[in-house]
Each structure stands twice: as structure tokens, then as C-alpha cells.
Amino acid sequence: MSSDEQRRLGQLRDNLAAVHERIARGCADAGRDPAEVTLVVVTKFFPASDVLLLHRLGVRHFGENRDQEAAQKFGEVRAALSHAGEQEPVLHFIGQLQSNKAGHVAAYADVVQSVDRPKLVTALAKGAHAHDRRLLVLLQVSLDGETSRGGALPEELDALADAVAAEDLLDLRGVMAVAPLGADPDASFARLREVADGIRSRHPGATWVSAGMSGDLEAGLRHGATHLRVGTAILGSRPSLL
Ligand SMILES: *Cc1c(COP(=O)(O)O)cnc(C)c1O
Image 1 (spheres, rainbow, N blue to C red):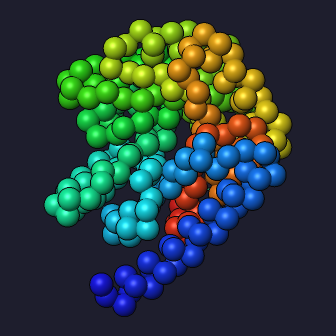
Image 2: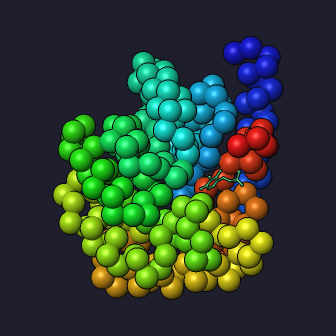
Image 3: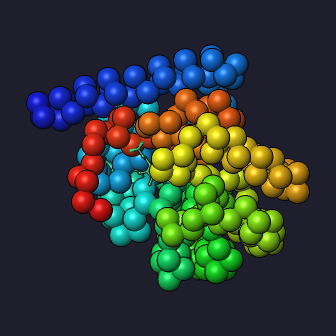
């Protein structure tokens, strides 16, 4: 390993340890068991080499938000890992998704966290069949009535959940949300928990709540998050243009 790689590995190790420490403290404060929380490390904008270093540090769940970038990067990552006989990473697609890209995402993602409309359900199901793969699905919820950044309105969720549940290769696992900009994350995630409870009353397998990022993971943990999506706090800041 080159000295640059050594330095990056050290940086990622320190940042990862700090995030695990925040999770441990956040769980203790919320009276929760850290074993019920999955850390998804968001590697968008960062290279396959970082994913491989994180994998070496024990990370198994990764998040990406753009189809082309994710396909290319995880193609490389999986080839390198399977060559070395290493454990497969689990890839969570967390970005806004056009239905014409959904078939492609179905070829390589394990979890799609950003399902927010019926057309996407149909397209993912078709893709899952074409590639003979099973996909785990979270419904992305808009918590401020604004859907331009992705997410279904709470009143649309029952129909969307039923549409996912009707597909044999899609497994409805729960909900995801981003706290709206400027909103109190505690209020947002409290609302998300109510929404999640409503869906679970009709779909008992939908137990996941993906809530909390670098800036608000403690709020997520206070309101029942089972999955945290953390990028910046582990990989550093991303270029701000996009
Ligand atoms: C980029 C992104 C994250 C990670 O955000 P950080 O603030 O860097 O931790 C989480 N969720 C979604 C949907 C994202 O697009």
C-alpha cells in the first residue's frame, strides 16, 4: 500500500471510529441497542479505492445516489473483492431515480431507498425480473409537502406500499426520509416514525427506518432510525457544485 493510501486509510479509520462513537452515545441516550442500527456509508463523489479501504475497515453497507457513478464504481469494487474472496458489499441506492434508469439500477443495487412513485415500482419490478434479482425497497417520504427533491407525500404511501408488496421480487422493508432543510430534525423524524408505524401496521415486514445523516444522526436515533446514511463525517466534504 502506498503512503497516500496509508494516510487515507488512517483518516477513514479515525472518522469511522468517531461516527461509531456518536452512534454508541446516541443509542445510549435513546436507550437503544447499537446492534439494531446499520451504518450505511455514503460514498458518492468518492472513488472505488475509498470504498475498498472502508471495506477493509469492516464497512459492508454503502450508499450511492447516481446510477452511472454507482454502476461503474461498484462494478470495480465487486470485481476487486470477489477476486480476493472477500465478503460482498451491500449497495443502497439513495438518490432520485428516473424510471428509465430503474431497470439498470435493479441490475446491481441490493436496496433501493428512494422509491416514491408507482411508475418507479413497476420499472424496478421489471428490472428485477430481467436480471433475476430480488430488491429490498424503502419508500422515500417527503416530510414538508415538497416533492421536488424526491419523496412521496404521506397520503400517497399506502397505495405505494401496496404496489411494492404486490411485486414478487420487491421486498417492502420500510421508509426513508431526509430532514427538510431548515426544519427541526427531531420534529421531522418524529413525523417519519408515525408514518413508519402506519405502514408497518399493514405491512409487518416493513421495519426499517432510514433517517439521519452526518449532521443529524443523533436525532434519527432518538426517533427509531434503524439505518443511518453518513457521508461527509466519514469521507470528508464533497465538491459543492451539484
Ligand atoms: C448525500 C446523502 C447523504 C449523506 O449526507 P452527509 O450529510 O454527507 O452525511 C444521506 N442521504 C442522502 C439521500 C444523500 O443524498
